[in-house]
Amino acid sequence: MTPTPSTATSTAARPWRPRCLVPGIVPAAGIGGLALTSGVALTATSGWLITAASFRPQILTLLAVIVAVRAFGIARPVLRYVERVKSHDAALAALAEDRGRVYDRLIPLTPARLGARGRGDLLAGVVDDLDDVAYAQVRVVVPLVALAITGLAAVLIDALFLVPAVPVVVSTIVATLLVGAVDWWIEHRTQDEVVAARARVGDVAATVTRDGAELAAIGAHAEAAAWLGDAQRRLARAVRAQSWGRALGVGLMPLVAAGHAVWMAFLVEPWVQAGFRTPLAALLVLTPIALGEVIGAIPDAVGSLARAQGAAARLRRLLDQEPAAARSEESPSEDAPTPGPRPHVEARALEASWDGRRPALTGADLDVAPGEVVAVVGPNGSGKSTLLATLARHLDPTGGTYRLGDLDALAQTPADVRTHLAIVDDEVHVFASTLRENLRLARPDADDEEIHEALRLAGLGPLVASFPDGLDERLGTGGRGVSGGERARLGIARALLSRRPVLLLDEPVAHLDHPTAVAVLDDLTRASTDRAVVLVTHRPEGLDDATRVVTLSPAGGPDAGPGTGPGAGLDAQPG
Image: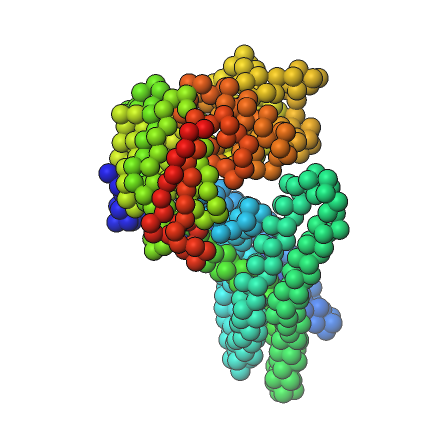
């Protein structure tokens, strides 16, 4: 059975969308609005009190205003504290939930739909985008709601005391929104360029950090520094272009408040001359200035809005892709059928395409019995990695059959098929943890004796014996460095510890020198006498130990895309 595109589409998850408002954020924003309204009222009533006191009235006539000043002075920090706690609780809870949702969506897309983005970009980009979307709840919703509440309160106060003053406050709010809109437009227009530049910095930094030892070995320090410098300069240019919007907003917002305060002063002056109470005039003049705290937060809010909109669009483009294998989102089933203890790998006339248009693999036949090592070779673009991705159920074939022993592998979920496969590629990841925990990723219930046996079979026994802390030796960042050969052997040890009957090896010695590559593959061959092994390689090392060598021959040429063209064939020779 070959899954069809319609099958994949029917099982795809619903489109991913960020939540506009998370639970609890609107009440928190309302409390924030009351806090800022208290600040505006504090400034206005303080001005009224100071002006009224200058006339030396009876103290009892000022008592109510004195109490109001104290009340607003206490309410402002208390309400602000409550708003901060509640809004951040809501945003962080939503962030934790969204991270789980995004992780669940990424798993079915790995690795076929993520290859266009570098590791540094993918790691930093997804994390930063999620942060921007979540923090927009605090940085955008709260200030805008606060502006609405405070602006409404200011309009009501002005309408209560002097109706002609209402247009001044309304104009203050309108001018704030106009400046904010221009700021948003500039920042939104340049956001993609900033993100692309930041992604480049992340990719280069990840490469330099990961391959620092190799770069040092070939004396490429200067080149690595130049790569990073170029990426940083590109980022600096993009950030400078974007900063014009923020500079415009931050520079104009105080002028908006000050200009409307002057306008209010000219407006009320004739009324004061006509007998309007001076303390009330002071209250009205200070209202636009008091609004300065509210409108001063708008540039940050619209900047966060531009970042969040760009982040949400990027996450949608990433997460709304169709998985390359149908039913990839399903977890392994406990009652799934098994292929038997030592399954035979059998593929007939396999065809596959990464984009649904250009063939990447055509007419592939493969037979691997337990205990056999079949090497798959061929030039770039011949479909070697596509074949391995199809066997690993990372990519659905467009034609042909694929069986594991008695099991029709294409009729099962990818997760169920992968429980019988161990995959080792050319970039084995070493986590910043102990050697034991790095191995137990393959089988969490493995005991120390089983771990030592896997390490011995992978050729790491003498090395582990030299560790002062044995299996508790820390590897990776903050611990012992791992060479390329040790990294490859560690990946093989994980595969052996997993006890899975089929090993799929994608260029496991691609970055190793010839003697190390030969030694690693010799150890692998000796340790896999009861497993079916498929080895994809460009190099001649290990071919002498292979049971058979299968050569993929492309027919399409360079323009055929990432795989082979129509009519590609297979030539098999004994090893």
